[in-house]
Image (cartoon, rainbow, N blue to C red; front, side, top):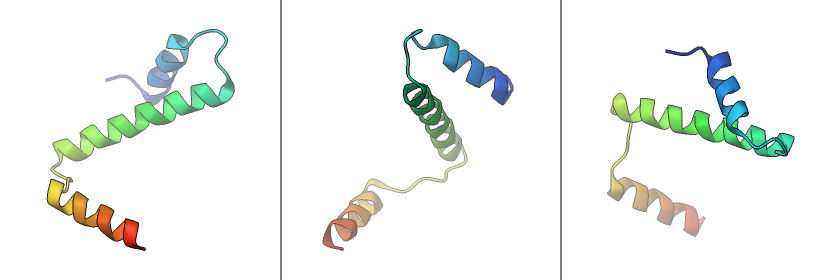
Length: 62
């Protein structure tokens, strides 16, 4: 397993040379969201499709 620093360095190196600071931060944040989502899924910290729809409906009404 790579350290956080190694993972971040790899993501940064994959970006085009003309990437902006914001673009790089966005890619780092996206990678972290994916990592957290996969971890949540592995640990069964998920919600059903039905629960997702109910939550979305409640948000649209509010």
